[in-house]
Length: 160
Image 1 (cartoon, rainbow, N blue to C red):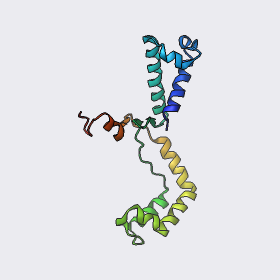
Image 2: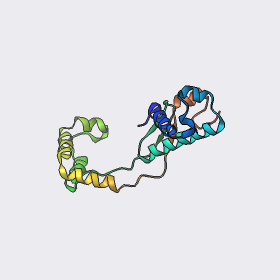
Image 3: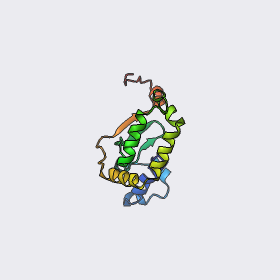
Image 4: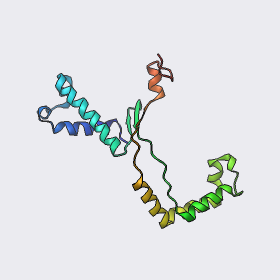
């Protein structure tokens, strides 16, 4: 995840390579006395930095107000033996499946199965292959936090 501080560092790093902005020794002073072309370059660099983060599959969060996230596709990281064992466990009566994750967390046979999967070399190979073969979706999810939405007096449907 890239936070505001890291996003700023990366943006400024990109801007330092620009010769017209390189001459300014103090970045705070630069930001106070910006002209339109310089501001345009900063905004372009900022957006480019966000784009690069998303290309590198990093989530971006700006001051807990906004977030850019690329949905992660589901991966199947188990070999055939352990896929079958997981399917059999879902059908087994060793724990009450109606309780959801609570039942699974207390189930000893499920805990043993998870430890077995973590140690399995074949499962690791299958997971690596599936992660490499998956193409990231082109869509990006943009979310506005509920607190920020309330501070702007915007309802959940975007109305004022």
